[in-house]
Image 1 (cartoon, rainbow, N blue to C red):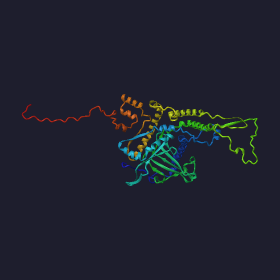
Image 2 (image 1 turned 60 degrees about the vertical axis):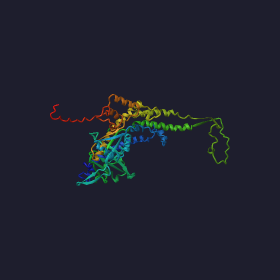
Image 3 (image 1 turned 90 degrees about the vertical axis):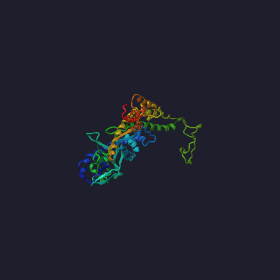
Image 4 (image 1 turned 90 degrees about the horizontal axis):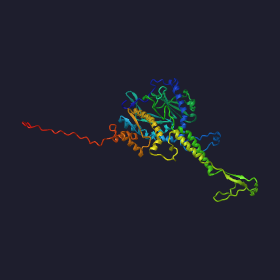
Length: 510
């Protein structure tokens, strides 16, 4: 409708099969298989989060050593596996969103971008998606929207739109078998309560409706992998009908799938898992060896020919044992210890630090190679390149960041256009990104000048340098004048005003 009102909630069964959906095959066909697919994907996502947060445990090649060192500290963990995520995240900056036609831009900025604090939220969406490989954006009319009576029917007055990020630990898109780009449904599942009172909530989102389900009271506390269709019943609230259904008038599930590849993403730091395990082990072992470097383990060789008498007369009235008395040997510079009955004393040499440091550098290089990340992100001790050398070093990473920006940009575009559609506006959206490579050095701008001298329009070179369309246009470099106004031409003059010639006097033939 032109005034922004749309049918949002269905009241009553309205002809739906109702309870027949529970036993008629719908739950059996979708809920349980979708829940099983979501559950099967969780371990990989949990592993990705563990490496992102630096919580991966130390790995052991020998079970015997693992048992001996069980309970060791993690205080020395150095998390380098997170750096590939940071490297890409640093290059995913949204600089602007343009709506066509332009009259919807103000609506987008206030009702979508500012209302949902997307300047703060969008980096978090990128961070989580890069970490997990997948992420889901939920777009739906805001809680302030309400049903109203109009022309004898209930309609929804849309006051705003909510945009929320959902983790792939709780959400999963199920794609159509024939069209792998089409989302057939989205499942969201989570648990509430503790122990035997734990209940599982499941929402299923389709193109035309949404369903809410909850485990029955007699199925609470049951493990997710043992749940069947018989364990669920409709979940109702103020938004649903008595069968737990909500009408979806928008023709698609209200979820938008961010991913680093299709159909499901891959964590950008997955290639760093093995190297991180090796580095964690090397650093932990190095810290253990450092104790022996500070406090060397010593030994004493007894003289087999010496007597056992220590010349200390311990009587029966002595209340303390010899080992309980304070030592008379003082550790201080210039002091001398008199040790009796020892033929020789010495100390074991501590482990060579290079046995730990050199392999660490090797695994850092492995991590850089397997994640397409420049080595300086892992080892800042080397020389940092600049200018053209920096761009050459960053080229593989920049290429990856551009690909991910295109992928994320397409998803943002769909989500933003859907949000405007909920608000009653039809518009095309273009998401603008900052360039993924450095553009602030003299060599870069000399290259830009060379392209302009070769005939590339100034507008094109500025857009390639990362400036937005709005900025370039404001400077006068428009599509009609890509090289800007031609100030060398004089301004156009108004045509001269013709001066009327008075008629000749009568009888004057001249």
